[in-house]
Length: 65
Image 1 (tube, rainbow, N blue to C red):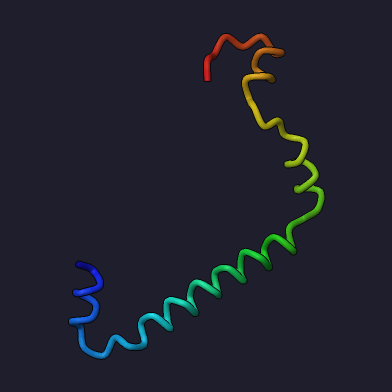
Image 2 (spheres, helix red, strand yellow):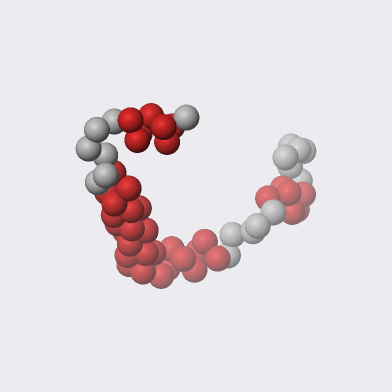
């Protein structure tokens, strides 16, 4: 249905190429952001626990996740 609607609009041959360029720019921006990320922040994030229930149990929290 969506593809039929888009093909019915005149002069949309540029649309797939534009979407590809936008997606590639977004991907490149994320790669640049990750490379430029402060290494100390990355180390701090590495030390975060993956399961929050373990830390809650050791702290004595009665909350259930």
